[in-house]
Length: 119
Image 1: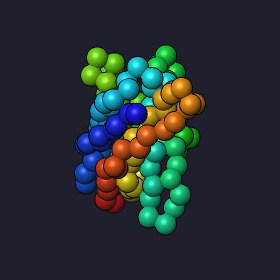
Image 2 (image 1 turned 90 degrees about the vertical axis):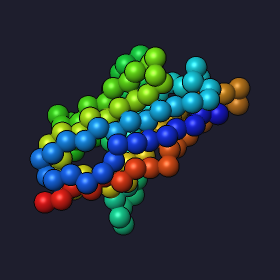
Image 3 (image 1 turned 30 degrees about the vertical axis):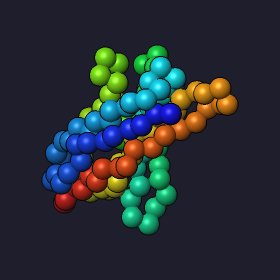
């Protein structure tokens, strides 16, 4: 199994920046991809950005050019640098890891971290 712990959320004014961190532990070598998702009140959870172990990234259109996902393999940590934040970026941000086991591919979620952008 893989355990995830997020940090770095908070309150920021529109136009500001935040960096989220997600530290993974457990079966690190089985991870194939990690990513960030977010869920705003009354809305479904949506993909923000993902990164594979090969470094291939993918972004939601709404954050492309403003957010950057990166990873530090030595620290087993994935980051989400968020710039030019908008009030519509307000949500709980969740880290996700996709990993392989003998029974197939599974996903783990972190506990979530609140990001609030004031106008």
